[in-house]
Length: 65
Image 1 (cartoon, rainbow, N blue to C red):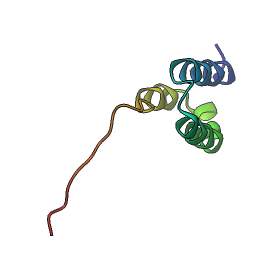
Image 2 (spheres, rainbow, N blue to C red; image 1 turned 180 degrees about the vertical axis):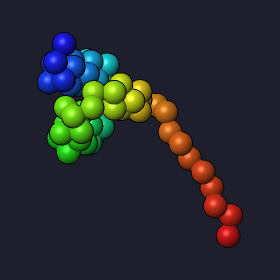
Image 3 (tube, rainbow, N blue to C red; image 1 turned 120 degrees about the vertical axis):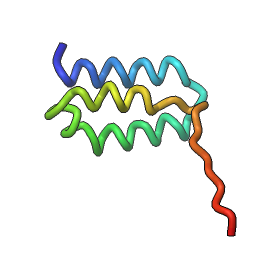
Image 4 (cartoon, rainbow, N blue to C red; image 1 turned 45 degrees about the vertical axis):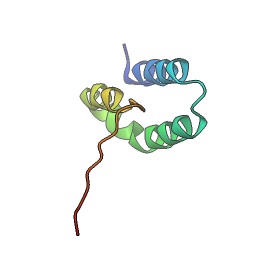
């Protein structure tokens, strides 16, 4: 499978999984557009990105002042 086909499959999977998250999908599309050259050059990063686009997962930390 080519890098472009993998990218299309990941995008379709995200859209199918979270169709009601308009802002999230817009953010994912913008990041995909900027990182497409990276994914085409080295597809292993696409697997990492696919794991990172879980909207219910948040990394939050608190800095006490």
